[in-house]
Length: 238
View 1 (cartoon, helix red, strand yellow):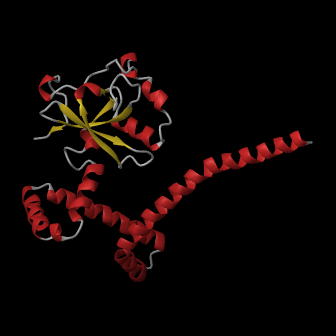
View 2 (cartoon, helix red, strand yellow):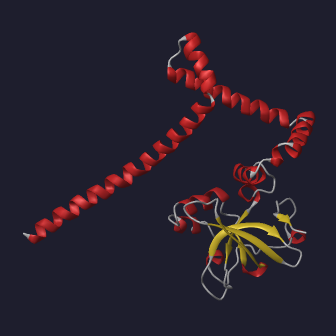
View 3 (tube, helix red, strand yellow):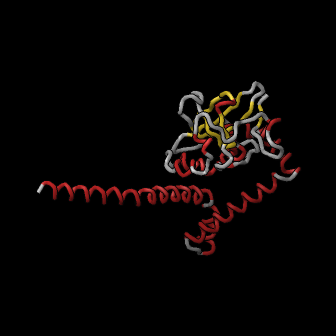
């Protein structure tokens, strides 16, 4: 009798866990898009109000047109600041007005790094590397991004934390504990970070055997002058 009860309890527990595994991600994604939708509709509410009151449009259609107008404005502004005159005008306005706003520069820098708006963004130019933080003799390693080469032969690496890859730790280490992994793309590494390490085995399958051993090397981080010509390099610090 107790075994039957145990089997029923296990069945109920597995069913509930299975349902949560399927439904919770969908719910989180739904809440996220609902949050984005509420922000966009708040911004575009003046346009939506004109369409609803003046032309009798339904709410959803008015919100859609408002979002389209917002995207168009972003496109036009982005196009404008890429011109010589527009870039000059925005730079002057940013220096004299926007830079005086508390926290503006920090927020702008973070957004530019994440979206790849900066040429030296680690998310666009960083090279995936395997780092033996305690030396190659100790079999403890992490995946990170090589972000900077230093004149003294050391390098800076950014090691993201899961499940939020935009936060992490910055280490300044000797070059000989770095193994570059050109076989792994930044996007692939970030997916593993978001999954808190799940899928690392499949990721390491693309590495040569040397890249999996503390003493082995797929490609050791080299100074800028020793790299093959044409390969993008992280920005060197003065």
